[in-house]
Amino acid sequence: MDQADFEAIASAVREFVDREVIPREEEIEENDAVPDFLREEAAKMGLFGYALPERYGGLGFDMSEEVRLCFEVGRTSPAFRSLFGTNNGIAGQTIANYGTEEQKQRYLSAFAAGEEIGCFALTEAEAGSDPSGMRCRARRDGDEYVINGSKRFITNAELATVFVLFARTDPDAVGTKGISAFLVDAGTPGLSLGPHDKKMGQQGAWTSEIYFDDVRVPASALIGGEEEGGFRAAMKSLAKGRLTIAACCVGLAERIVEEMTAYAVDNRQGGTPIGDFQLVQALLAESETDARAGRALVLESARAYDAGTDLRQGPAVAKLYCAQMVNRVADRGVQVLGGMG
Image 1 (cartoon, helix red, strand yellow):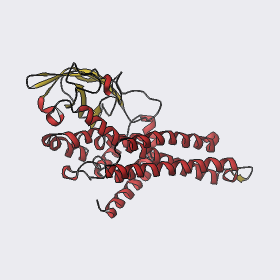
Image 2 (cartoon, rainbow, N blue to C red):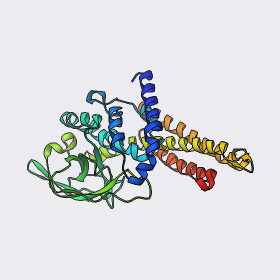
Image 3 (tube, rainbow, N blue to C red):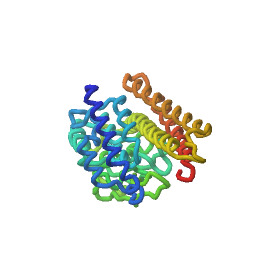
Image 4 (tube, rainbow, N blue to C red):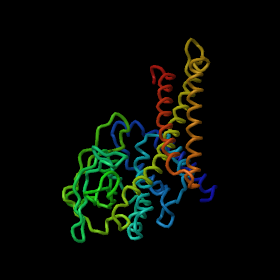
């Protein structure tokens, strides 16, 4: 994408987040839901497809552009980004990278327009990002597959119109072998959901359990048309997703630094701005340093990802560091704000 066009999009997203999303953070928190208005406006801005190929209606951002956009989106409630994160990320990328042309045509344009929402059904009670313990099964029966099993902590399950499902097609395989990926439309008989989880944080970003009880899908629902490609597809999508999560952590850390700095300037103790006190200055300096280090790490990891020189370690390191970093910054923010923290 032309640099000027990208800068215009990023600027518009930042302005939208500041004007429309941040003022609704308490509403999202209290109602445990993102207002329909924000979803509709996000769709109009192309946020449901910024990382999807242009030929299918997306904006075609590369990784470096995607993380810079996530710096802006990450400045507000994680639930906002969660609305469209799976369409652009783990669900959409699985289809874009490994789907047949028919599958791409069927789903990606609708994903990019925000008309459909996908979810990534990988995690189970005994199998998380490492799916070696996966117990969900898909058995071939003529021109169909019969799916049985369950999934846990699946983001957007209640909102999803299509599930990117991972299941074992080879019952004798162990570890990461014999795993395939399927597209299962919402409403398919035998598919049911548990209520969305009550979490300590991230209200408005729904996760739920999914149950498959003799769910039948046509053989054409097998992503890529071949069995045993599921593990590779999952790992590639997860690696890309780690970088976007890291970028969102940076955006949130930068927002916290802005707010704690403004508070330190305006708030006084004994007639003196608390920002003049050495301890407060140290908290601000450490937080600014953390946020800058996180931004630099994410940008470098995204550059290496685009160059194809590091598709695994960079994203993993960035997510590890930035997820810990934003917690440190948030803790310092609470300290600076004191009783208002």
